[in-house]
Image (tube, rainbow, N blue to C red):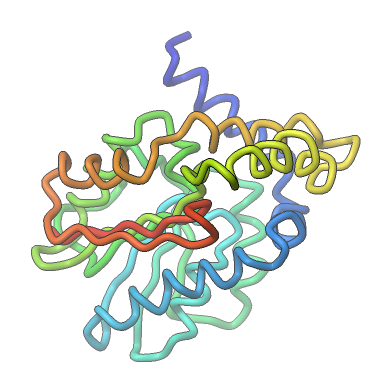
Length: 233
């Protein structure tokens, strides 16, 4: 089994198991901050879109970003894509009566869409869980029209030397127990490890530039524990 396939298989199993508790646990372990960070993303996206725009939400999970965008008005059409059926079931349950959002199963490394068919593409706390960061960003760029933007909201290990030790202590020792309890501690340990092993802010910006995106912008929150990076095709 290749390293890429091994990671995909592991991540798939984790999200299949924790789908039902994912949103509650994330709100709890982030001390409610994740909701603010996601609003920072959706506000940025909405301000850049024309009326009637089409947006792709990659690794949409339980659909919170997709639904926030769909509820923003301006006749936005949203497609949420994820590879976990369990997560998509949660998203469909939350979709309810909304007609301007749909959820599809698919792989971020091989998006099932033609070139330049969306006005923007977003990925929220999902890039670090893909098996190929560069390929994921390239695919997002491919499906966005010229002039559209690609957005990534992601967890990082803070670079601040004072904050970093406390961050690691919390997310390595405390967070898995708070988020997963005894039954799902291993799954939430992985979420820490995926953040620990992910890129730094400068590397993430370089990844966007290497994919051919321009006008790259970045904004950090909580001493760099969360970063929003975007680039224009």
